[in-house]
Length: 277
Image (cartoon, rainbow, N blue to C red):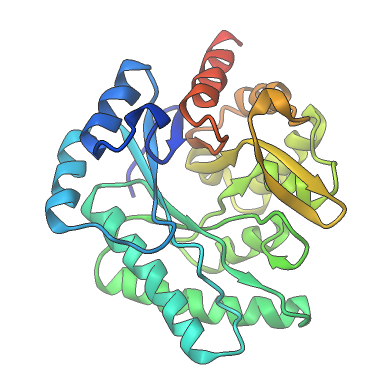
């Protein structure tokens, strides 16, 4: 797997000021702003030509890349064809990440659909095994990461992603701290609570999970049912300063992708505050 030696700050997709331009322009902006990389957002599908993959690999060779799989994924669907399509979308994302020399991919794995959590876990695990088998056979060298989700109706609390990480060598969590905060209805927003999550991962998986971390952060609006939508950090109650202090204290390394609507501005805000600690 690709190694990282520090905490890197990534934009979720191309910076806004890229406009309708290309990856090449996006990477120029990221470098000019002294940011560390970008999460490629394959929201509606992995539509990336071989030529673009080669360009991204070349132009971003001194940056950290991650990738977010398409949103149309449910490894617990009652319809077999939807499960198969979900597996294929994740594999396509891994292939794009491999081709561009990306560090890690992430995805929202499943919905509970009223089923027992243990049953859903086994369904998700069965599909992840298929994905990992393909990754092994194709010698893909990319971390595969189910993301913590923002609503209680979605599979993916902290304990579930830790458990799955222990079942597969290539799997580690993507911790979306904003989702954890929203899912809990406003908890997990203090230094001690952030530290509890990091401790749980370090003890539950191992130090290497903190040395190879992938996380998401943004401002977030939520209700008792969980996540509603992302906000800019300063327009929300997300306690990003205490989170960054906890990440520093635990010497977390890897990729922090900022998903705020103002993309590059909050990414820069996070990096500058982190470096000031």
